[in-house]
Image 1 (cartoon, one colour):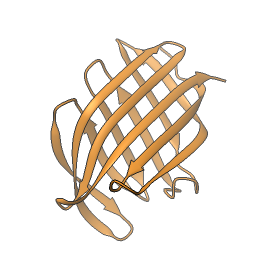
Image 2: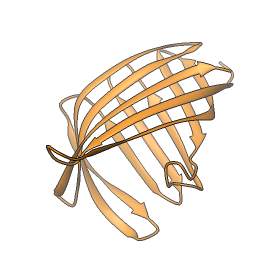
Image 3: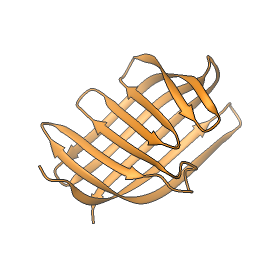
Image 4: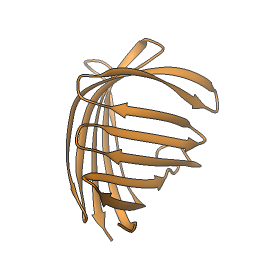
Length: 141
């Protein structure tokens, strides 16, 4: 299937502890295709996310989600329910090891777009655990 232009709406909440959390909401233009039961999308990050110059690609399959970032920040994150994995995350400030424990994935996509929700805990160098909830909505222009 050919890629098509879409609008990607992102809502994320990051909970640092019982009292502190912050959220980020933004919309961006991107490209999308749906084939063989998997959704594929990509977009350029902006000042809103603090990752200007980074291309983010997302592959949403039946049982996993893979996020690849290449540019100012480089890393590959694989989300799979019940799986804790570790991955290198390269930033302008150096390389760090991130750990990710995926709690829940919910996704429904077709050739027109769809929605996804991720619930996961992220830690940096085995410390500073942050609970994250991410909602992604992909819709045609």
